[in-house]
Image (cartoon, rainbow, N blue to C red):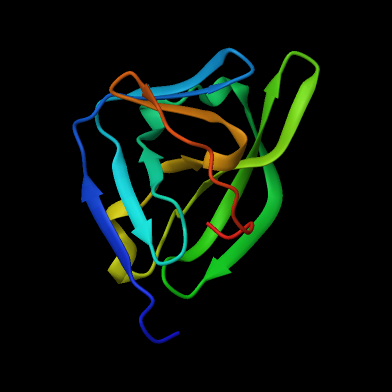
Length: 127
């Protein structure tokens, strides 16, 4: 796709991810991924994610600009949000800055950056 770009930058902003009032992640070490046509994605170090709430799924997707992603569902009580989190364990070299970091669909969680709620922009299911 001509003109399609990804940009990966580190930020020291305080990022919190919540779902139905439950904090899923909190970090001062997020990596921002900006990709043509998509909202900014916040990639979070695994140690800053409540991985005890995550359940691996069989879902995998391939992106020509990042590589192959693996997915997790989030379970809070009896409610399961399917394939809400993904990670590129071995991305292509151009996306090495997100290796092993976890990302949540902006459209399906609440994201707060430095205390400011981020708008939930509806997009296609691409990430």
